[in-house]
Length: 336
Image (cartoon, rainbow, N blue to C red; front, side, top):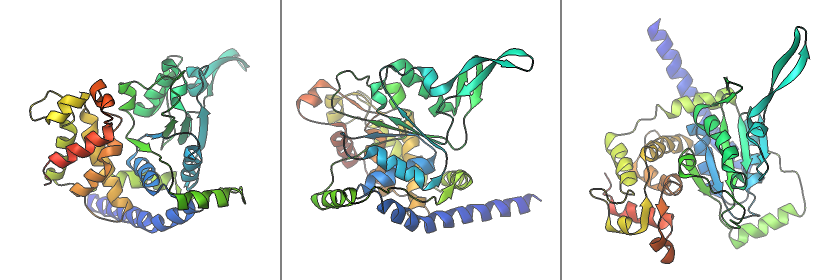
C-alpha cells in the first residue's frame, strides 16, 4: 500500500511539472495580450506565487502595476480581492468584524468576512495606510489566518498578498517596518518601458479596453505545484552559496566585505537564505529545468535581498542603492 501511495504521489508530481511546463507558453501568450514588456517582473511575480509567498511590487505611478497583478491573477481560477489602502483604513476593514444580529435563538454575534478572505489579495499602495492597519496583514501573510473576536479563522488556500507601493511622494505615507518587509518573499521593481514597448502600450490602450486573461490553473493546480517546488533538488554547495550571499550583507561580521561595513546599517536575516532557495526552486520549474544552479541564486539575489538590506547615510550621499550593493556582494562570493 505504501509503495502504491508513493507511486501515486510521484505520478501526481510528474503531472504537475508537465502541466507547468506546458502552461508556460500559455501563460506568456495570455499575459502578452495584456502586459507589454516587464518580462522579468512578471516572472518574479509568478515565482512568488508558485513558491507560496507574498510579493511587494515597487514602481512609480502609471506603470500598470495594478493591471499587471489583475492580469496575472486572471490566469489562475482563484478568488481575487483588491483593497485600496488609505490613511483612514482600519484593521477591521481588512480582516472583517463581528456584528450583533437577531437569530433564531435571540441576539448573537455573527462574523462578517473582510476582503482578506480570498485567494489573491491586491494590497494597493500599502504604504498609504497607518502601521496598525498594515500590521493587520502581518498575521494573514505569515500564518495564513486572522484573529478576530478572540478566535482564529483560517484563510482560503492558496493565499497570496501582492502589495504595491509608490517609492516617490513619501509625504503622508507610512513606510513599512523592516519586520514586515521581511515577510515579503520578493520585492519586484517595475521600471519604465523601452521606447518600442511604450509605443505598443500607447497603441493598444488607445484602441481597445478589453484586458481580461483566461484561467490556466485552478486552486488545486497551484497547491500541487507549490508542493512539487519544495521537492526540487538543491546541492548543499548551492544552499551554502545562497547563505553566504545573505550573510555577506550583514555589517561588522567576520568576513563581511569592507564596502558592506561602509554602506550598510542592517543586513539580511535568516529568511533571506530561505527565500533565495525556495524562489530558485520555483524558477527552475517555471523554466522547465530539473535542479537549481548558482545562476538561479544570482538571478534572484536583487529582488530577494533589496528590501531586506538597509543602507546608511553615507551610501545615500554617494548615490549607492541596495541593488548596487547586492551586485557587488555577488562579485565577491566565489561561485561553487
